[in-house]
Length: 184
Image 1 (cartoon, rainbow, N blue to C red):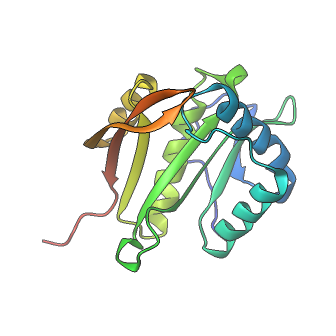
Image 2: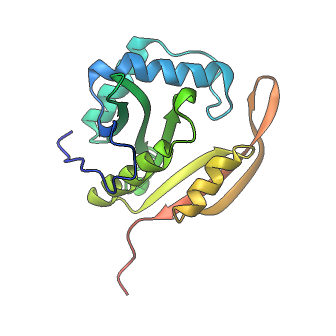
C-alpha cells in the first residue's frame, strides 16, 4: 500500500512510532492476536491462527488497499500493538464502509496506544474516501466503548447473545463513525 502514514498527533512517548506493517512484523502481530484469541474476549475466534493464514490475510488486505499499521516500541524494537480496517461486507454497496480492529500487547496497556492507532486509522480512512467506520465491540469491553465514544463513534446497534466465547454467550455493541458528510 502506498499511503503516507504521518502521525496525526504525536501524543505518544517519543520511543513509540506508528508505521505501516510489513511482512517482517507478522510474527509479532500474530503473537498479540493469538494471545487475545486464547485468553480474551475482544475477539471471538476460538482457535489460534497460523502464520501462513495470517500472511494470506495480510496479502489480501494489501491487494485491496486496506492498511495495517503497527505501533513500535523503538527502545525494545518490538511491536506493541497493531490496527487495521477492511471491508465491512463484501457486497459492492458497502464499498465505502469499513470495519476496524485494534489490538495492544497487554504489557503496553493504558499508554494511549489504542487511541493513537485509532486516530491514525480514521485519518487513513478519510484519505481513502471511506464513508463509515464500524466498530463491533464485546459489550463488556467498556474501555473500548468509552474510547470510541470519545472519538465520535455512536452506538447504532446492540446484538444480545450473538456470539460465544469460553462457553458463554456474548453480546455485541455496534458503533459507527461517519467520516465524510454528505453534501447539502
